[in-house]
View (cartoon, rainbow, N blue to C red):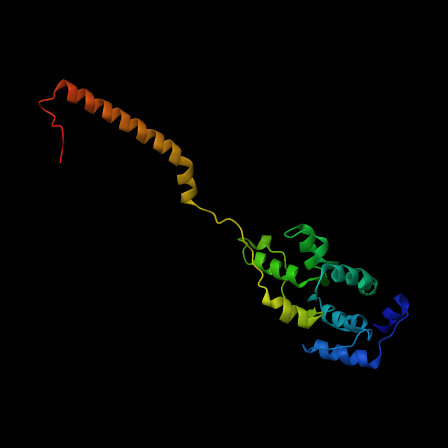
Length: 206
């Protein structure tokens, strides 16, 4: 692992960054000040979690950071034979996004990850699923993602299929025309019968 970073970047991790790697790998929050190398430190956690082939999701707060970090860190992961992609580069429910989820390391924004999860719970066939099994995720700006943004629910809305009601609305004009013709025919027959036999048919029927 250090050999890979030396060849590609001529960088090595500091001891404190190894400590941050251990904290992150054990599902703990790790807080670093600005310019202390959070991005560099996180590469250790990504590599250790995805090398067994289980996949890692990297959650960021906006699409700019997701695209930037995936492009910036890509050479390091590719040097180790790993695939990397960003879901924000692809349209929802597309083959490109499905391929991005099947990468070893998948970058994306919290909203896109959330909406893809909701859409996957609405499909009717396993072949329509986009996300892979959920294994491990690292959340950048965890306070914004899990506190601030979490107060706004993710909602997927759209027209509700009307089923039989829709067929009724389509057939209703034709039914109305048939009923009107029947009314006119019955009224005409009644009036003709009334005029021909006034003594038989009463004027009012109670």
